[in-house]
Length: 558
Ligand SMILES: Cc1cc2nc3c(=O)[nH]c(=O)nc-3n(C[C@H](O)[C@H](O)[C@H](O)COP(=O)(O)OP(=O)(O)OC[C@H]3O[C@@H](n4cnc5c(N)ncnc54)[C@H](O)[C@@H]3O)c2cc1C
Image (cartoon, rainbow, N blue to C red):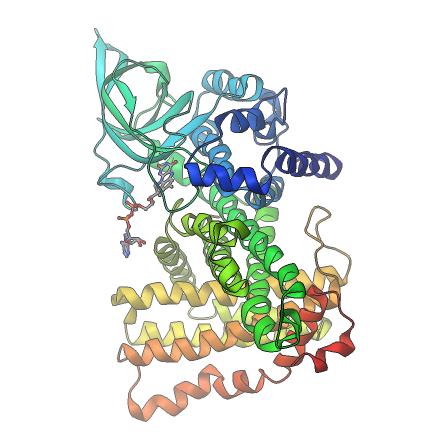
């Protein structure tokens, strides 16, 4: 972990660098030319210039040893500048992750020191034409090259698809099948038989270089096998998922806020029907406020997970999946709504929200698609439901009720409604064996993410009220405003879990007509609907805070 002062300075340097080197017009031109600004990426990673990668490299190898919380803060800020450039920087972290978690001390010393001292760029080569979400379908092979009884090296054959930095990296970590299973290898640019295609012509993140790789009898010495033991590749990839998914979660958050931070000021200046759009409730409460609430729910979960990773609780893959799922879906919705918020101007390149919308689209695809996140979340939490005989989410709900007793303003009571309803939906799904339907399993993943994030945001609002928020945490909202944001989101989460839960259980034939009333009652649906009372007033309040208005003006907004 790095000191708050150092992080603040790094964030400031990053912002200043972005303003100077990547102002709006430069970004628009690069996007139009579909060009990766390699020199800028190199400067961001150069120890003599911005040196952003130093944050991620452990201290013993010349870095600053930033923790998960630091990484989240930096990734959010990078995404606000440009998600393509951010992806290029991310690729070095991803590419070096198998080394950080699995390499021998000698390998770490060589490669991590080179990243810190020389600023070399890495690429992470896992995906293949026939192995995307299902990496086990990997076809690239690494065949042993023997020197008598000793393994002297490996010959790698195969191809990789959609590799960020694929055409510009100095070194690559490549996942390939050895006789003992998938393993990571370090391959350097220029190795004989190693080539890359032209950059892909992509929908978004056009400032990042994405290219296919081809490996034809590429020879590497045995010391390029990460960790020196074959068959560890998938474990090494798994070991950092919690951490790497948090980075992409922060991308969703940063990009979503970058879009809203353009829509909000725009709407104060745009006059329609005699007044600014910002004063029209039908505008703010559809296009701005709900997106703020979802993004901040994602942030709460990212911060909680980052703190737990930094406290040594392990890689927290499922929590990383929840954080990624919520923040990247919220980022996409926020960017999409921002196009609408700018009307025709939003649809043009000049105002950048359409670019942000194209860019943030990738965050629900790479580092595990949203559907794979839903599956990961659901499978893991299903086990908890079974192990606790259905009490896991009732217990979390009781925790929220206790929080409500101490902090009645943070929406923990609504989060508790979501969590109780979730426990009932899962129990009904268990009794009726509904997880045999994949769609039900994945929808449960979505409901779990909403309910858990509602709890997390209520806890964050309470900590804010107590002045106990992480000193590095975002302070965009004060305690009363964050409490209102939390109440808005928790009501949405409760309604989503209750109504969608009923829908999917009923849709899969999990509840007979005669049982319907009892099931509805167990979900607390009428309480959930009653809990929507006060929603518009809370949304008015959040809108007033976002627009810097006094509270009195809220009633006049319509
Ligand atoms: C711009 C860009 C940069 C990238 N950078 C890198 C990189 O640096 N390194 C790297 O290794 N990879 C990279 N990727 C690859 C990325 O991680 C994969 O695209 C992603 O994992 C999905 O794999 P796929 O594209 O093969 O899609 P598929 O796995 O074929 O999925 C297609 C659709 O089917 C759904 N689906 C898949 N399996 C299931 C299932 N079992 N049940 C239900 N639905 C399912 C998915 O959610 C998705 O909606 C990048 C991709 C892009 C586009």
